[in-house]
Image (cartoon, rainbow over all chains, first blue to last red; front, side):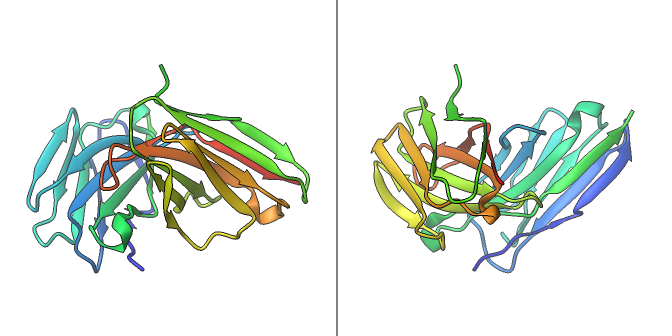
Length: 112
Length: 112
């Protein structure tokens, strides 16, 4: 089946630092989504990407749909303590019953 | 108003029991899902319903039976609970099969 490799698995950074994480696949995706999950909550959609090469921002978050359609990147600038959580990438290929495939998550910890 | 709501939020029960988790969405979406999140936070799809009809049924034991009385509701019934069923179960919905998912807050099931 399709798999998404998300890295890094975890990050422990200082408040104010920028953060980068990425997701790669051996398959092509038509849509990339980035979610954030806080403790005790469900994943919340942050950014949706629909076109190869697309760069989209949401506040301090910026995500890019890789030109090969096999990867995506999420950057967080000037991190703050409330950025703590698990960030998931998810891809939709249009195959496999249009099932959304999730990466394994990047656990972000921010030290004030 | 909560968009995707699921009850109960916590469920502790003994092995062998039968339990249900309910989910309702008020977003007017056509498609609803059940995901299982294990202790390593990996999100795995279990079922997907579109307009009350089952469209995805991943390799889930037949002790798990979803029921969709209408397109705003998707309930999950689990028979003969086992220790390995302990996890957080998330309900989600999307406007269409290929759309972005909106998640509920999760139901943490603990089987003793």
